[in-house]
Structures are given as C-alpha cells and as structure tokens.
Length: 318
Image (tube, rainbow, N blue to C red; front, top):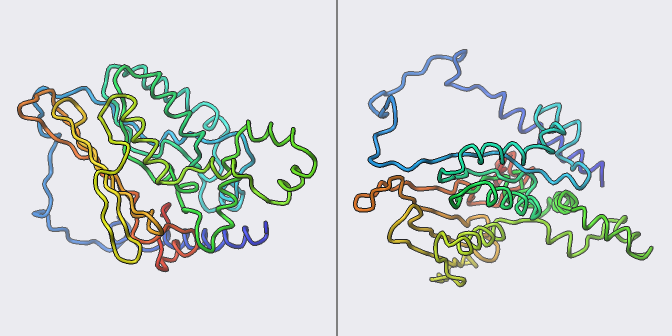
C-alpha cells in the first residue's frame, strides 16, 4: 500500500511540476503581450466608504493536527517538488499563538477570515480554530472557506478510486484522544487498527464540506450573528440526484446582513457553496454592501490524480 501511495503521489507531483513549469505569457521573460487597458479600472486606493467599520482581514493560519504521523503529502518526495510540503515544526506548534496575538492587537475590529483556517481538514483543527477566534476578539467573527478547510491537504475530497487517500485522511485526523483510547483497547482491537481497519471515530474526525457548512452555520446561530434556521428554507429536486437544499437568513441592520447556503445532496456535494453579505459601513440608511464569495465549489469532484490532469475532475490544490 505504501508503494502504491508513493507511485500515485509521484504522478500527481509530476503533473503539478509540469503545470508550474509551463510557459506563462504574462511572465516578464516571455513574449510581450498587449493588454487592452480599457478593460480595467484602476484605483490608487479603494473608493471612500462613509462611516466605514474597522475591519481585520486575515487568512491562511492553517492550523495543523499535530497528534498523528505525517501523511503521504508530508513525505520527502513531496518536499522535493513543493518546498512547503514539509512544514516547520514551529509553524505547526505556534500558529495558534501567532493568530491569537494578531487578533488581540485588533480585538475591537470586525474580523473576516478569508479561508484556509485548517490544513488537513480535521474536526479537531476546526475546534481549535473556533476556540482561538472566539476568545481573542470582542466582536463576532465570520469567514469564507478555503480549500484546506475541508479537502485533504486542500487537494482531494477522498472519494472514488483514490480511496487510498481517504484512508490517509482518516489517519491524518487521528487525535490524541484516539491514540490514548487505542492503547487501552484489547489486543484484538489493537491488531485490527494496525491492519488498517478504521474505527467510526476516526472517520468522524474528518471534516467534509457539508460538515464544515453545518459547523459554520451553527457558529453564526449560537453567536447570535444571524438567526439561521436549523432546517433548509427551500428544497429543489434536480435531475440525476442533483437535489439542492437552500438555507437563507437575513438581518435588516448591523454588520452581517445575509447568508445563503446551497447544499447539493447525494453525489454532488462538492458543488455546495455559501454566499454572505456584509455592511462595510456603519451607515444603516445607505449601506455599503460587500459580498463574500465561496470559491471552493467545483463542478467535478476534487480528486488527486485525475484532478491533476483535468480528467473530469479538479485538483483543489492547483
């Protein structure tokens, strides 16, 4: 199995390398390209917003589950192609402290997180992130998701024939509680774990996009940011199992104005997305509306190898 994983990883990394080494027509060393300047509107600064709110934009803290062994994407072969594959130990250990420091320095701001709060896509990473956020800011925080928040290392959803990576994802989300429980189990259960049979607890530690959306909506509801209904406000029946549950909630005033979640059920969960609207101004009569767009929804399911080559799939990390 380890040999198969290394072979699969090598193919993927080769595809990544070939894509990054391709000719970029906009690179200074490439042939010059004329650009129609009339298609672009350039501002030396953002347009002025009357009575603007103090905002803090933050992203990519990428909390990492440190309670298990390195996964296949943290191997030496990965680091040869991508020099950030093996993360420094200090980054994994102290990124929560750095995030907390930044938040406390700006604790009176409205915080908008722009994604990649997690790294592997584990539930305990989400729990750690929400704890740091909630304890470090005076105002409630909101976020728009990134690919690392619910895809394994930001690459694959762990389905179809790349189930070898689903297994690695479960291993990558093992917590210290799982490890302690495993040492207390009878011998036969330890042997089952060593032969690769995953417990239901290990699978529950993985955070998929639907689970992420549920957790985030729960945060909005319990923090009294917006009154999100616990059940979908609309259900749409689609063809070939493309059913959609739509959840909508609206505020008539304040910073956070509206959230709309489209959750595709059955086999198209990767198409799910969230859209949010905020008032960037304290002016309630003439609000300046900003839209937080979810860019992590894909028409085809994110996979590793097929996604790297674009074969009816996407690689969420490319």
